[in-house]
Amino acid sequence: MQEEKMALTTNSKVWSIMLVVSVFLSIIFAVLFYFEDIFIVLIIGSILVLLTDSILIEFNRHFGHKSLWARRFYAVSLVVIGIMLVSLLMVGQLSDMNSLVNSQEEYESGITSIFSTYGYLFSSLNNGDMGEMAGRGPAVTSDNMSENLSEDVNGDMAASPLISGEDMQSIGNYIFSFFSSLISKLSYFVFTGLLIIPMMFRLYFAKKNVIVSEIVAFFPVKYQDCVSSSILDIGKRLRDYFSAKILESVIVGFICCIGFYLAGINGWFFLGVLAGLLNVVPYIGPVVGAIPAVIIAFIVGPTTAFFAIITVGIAQLVDNLYLIPYMISGKVDVNPLLSVLLTLIFADMLGALGMILAIPVYIIYKVVLTEFYNELRKIYPDEYDA
Image (cartoon, rainbow, N blue to C red; front, side, top):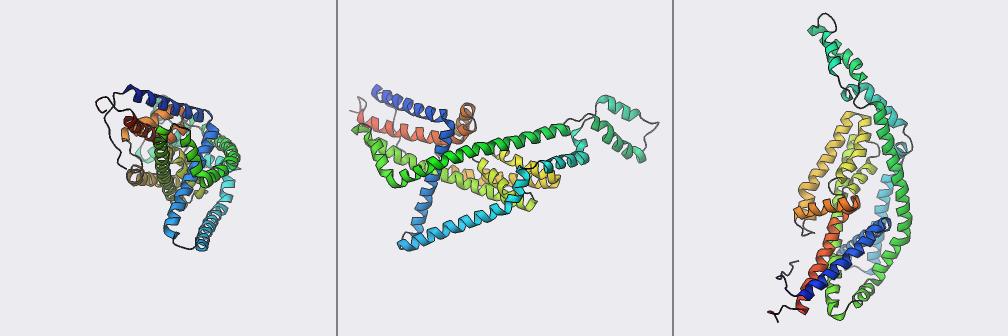
């Protein structure tokens, strides 16, 4: 949509109202971010509502000419097929995930095996050890050099490890405790979501027009057209943006699932889904999403870990070379440098949640301020325009 570009006004009344609108928006977002947990549930609910609305629009576009009973049949069939596919995948993964979440014995044995085989990679020689190696024995020939070096690697190098087995064990315990706390946090979101999200669906699909009318009626008559167009524009842009981001996550997660499955990683489905979900967090999300899969793959063996890293690399190449330039950028008209700055600023203020919401918040500010400014220019023209 081509936006109308207007010169900056010199009317102080316009800028006064713009300042009030900016402060009002900032207060709303400050309150929402203060109640972060509830805000996250509202965001998830809003994304689900907008995504469902997009799906219904596409469904009606393809099947709108069918009869009512035919549309219901197709809708129920698609939902049942989707639930069956997801259920089959999850049931096949439960045994693998139970072994990963409920038991650390496999992890501990894997760490022991890694250090018994590759412990020298995590060790270092000090200068004294090197001197003793060099001076040990009357002569070192080419025949016994390899044997002496092997003995020194297994002996002297293991004496001063850079990363010991205990350190790796502590890292593993931290990872397991992190995911345990994450699961308990998710239980809160699930409980809260079951209370709030169904109400959001009912309000949006049953009383959407009524709610918009009530919001518009709250403002003075001369601003109502501006408010109405802002709400419609924000809804369309956010729906397009989140639809593109969800499709991006699905594609990245699908690539990871295929790669992890071919690599023979236990829990490949959940690990691929996790990588896709965390991909919505700019910059650090892909790295964090790859860590669990790489750790579990490294326990199996370095070759498996190598394939896991290659899989994540391919997914990120597809994401950065195709999905972001051709899918995401087309939904949001924002300068790349400004996008990076906004993400970094929001990350510093609000952490990962700020990184995810930096662009949506920018969209809301941009639409509201642009619509109000253009409307105020018409209501309060400059003296030379009058």
